[in-house]
Image (cartoon, rainbow, N blue to C red; front, top):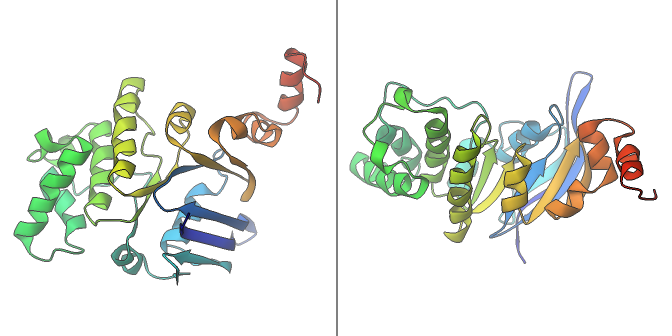
Amino acid sequence: MTALLQVQGVSKSFGGLRAVQDVSLAVTQGSLTALIGPNGAGKTTLFALMSGFLRPDQGKVSFAGQDITGQAPHLNAVLGLTRTFQIVQPFAAQTVRENIAVGAHLHLPQRALALARAEEVALQVGLAPQLDKLASDLTVAGRKRLEMARALAARPKLLLLDEVLAGLNPQEIAEMIPVVRNLVAQGVTVLMIEHVMQAVMNLAEHVWVLAQGKLIAEGSPSQVTQNAQVIEAYLGHGTAARLRAQHGDKP
């Protein structure tokens, strides 16, 4: 299967802090995969390196067979690589329709066509009834959908979702899962950063785990959640051994 995105030996430091250390991974075209890890693991920094918001100190990023290492985000978006942001900041004084049209303008300079594209995307993410509402009047869940819609309006081949489920209640998460799954059904490759493990277990085919800037595990969701290193990274040193002891398992 074709790797749409390849990250090879990428590292990034900020002063004395090594935020990402020698990370390599490949995202297969048509897949829905996840990047997980505890707070401060370097996940969002890695997204920034993939999408061009940061230039790596070393290593290479390739997209659709092209070297895009350190290339500006707007140029990567033209190629088909877009992302959402953990902190959602819509244009509050504009309507949902106008916000989505901002993303559509990447390929559609005519306002009428961009607004028509906004309607299509709103339907995809469940925002069609709120197209004429001001972005400032949306709920947290609505703003998360709007952030996704703006990125989708640019017609991405690969969409990087940065904690699109953060801050949502269980019902809102359950409603968002089929929206994300449907993106892949419509031909968009998705790589998501996520802390909501229920969603990761339901959505991701393959998971990479980052801790202290290093890739410590990868595999199916069930494989990585049983990995001792992953348990230690999330729950602290010695946890894996204690869990084994509780269940009568041998090391």
